[in-house]
Length: 114
Image (cartoon, rainbow, N blue to C red; front, side, top):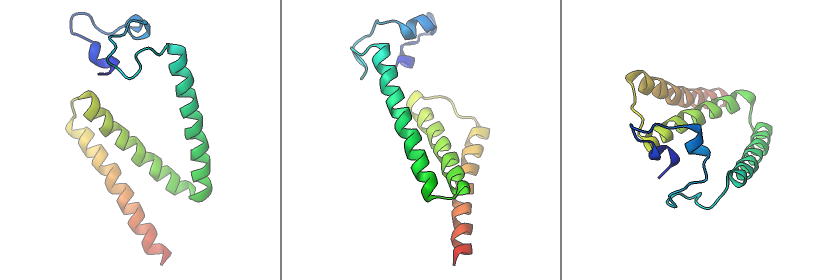
């Protein structure tokens, strides 16, 4: 269960409820303070930045941009599946366009390399 699942229609979600130390003990972060979670987040953000620079050394900037666009579309789908957000038809069309564009880019790139 995530912190977002704690919201009920009657009480709503407030900053105080997110930052409070009260935890129901069911989440993976039970027992961790906000400071520890921020430090863990900072470490992972740093590792992501370092890996992005390493990938940029191996790929062209256009390929990196295409990969980043696909990553964002996949994160949207993951959040839809995890949080159960409703999906509009325009959202589905947009994500399908991203995926189709990535595959089309890879196809054209392979054709021009040979």
